[in-house]
Length: 330
Image 1 (tube, helix red, strand yellow):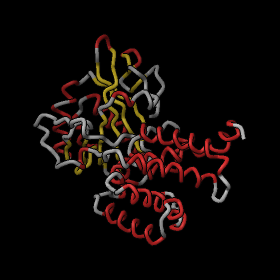
Image 2 (cartoon, helix red, strand yellow):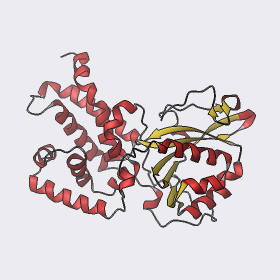
Image 3 (cartoon, helix red, strand yellow):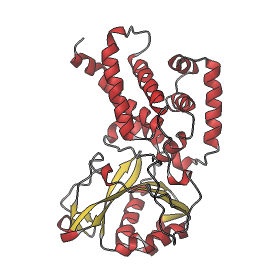
Image 4 (cartoon, helix red, strand yellow):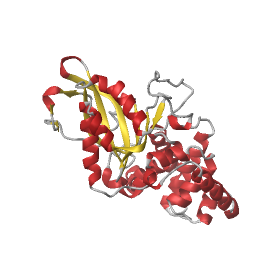
């Protein structure tokens, strides 16, 4: 078999394998590395693939094994809310040390191919999965997300059906204690979500506190990796925004985006000569009652892999948004 033939057979599985590895690892960069390793190992071992399972199952076997090996040597990825209680917006932001590794967002680079996996890559779910031991994590993903049979999972992991069922029960119990709610892990279908995102974006860029209070839910939370500080409740979030980002009124520009199958907002901060540079990517949980969660990744390096512009300029921008620049999804 030529490499072209191999690619023709295996490439259709790449996107779902990336989503699988991302759920396991909580990092799109690590997931991309593992998927690449999976394809290298599959190519080298393809002559030994005897068709005793489907090609898809065989690739998942390689990818899951590589993820489990990687997790033996890596720290658990977290979000700020998993490290301590919410803070006082009047206090200086605390920054985590290098020993803390953060859950990363997953760019929706190809919305057409991620549509079937959106609910299973929601940011809150992926963050909660990171608290499970590696094998429990694999079992829960394979059984509850991918709907594999217990016998298939046992065969893939080289264990018994009883062990799989036991691991699944423990994993489900842990998730039940994690505080996940339905609106955190399901795909909202209300067309008003885009309108709410637009209202939030305008309020954020215009430093409009009154409108901000109208679009935030009473129990909203806001997290900002790599800052350890996070805030719970509409009053606390609004106080932080009005005393920190809103001090820069007129110096912020935004683009709508998507990540983890969720609405997102790319935030650019003003520089010299009407030049706006990447500042952070906000991943939002939107419900019919308003925005319930904001996770703002203060990492400009996310913009390039997300397909977002490297900069914005005043000539491209109007009161209703970017004029000459196409709206790019993350």
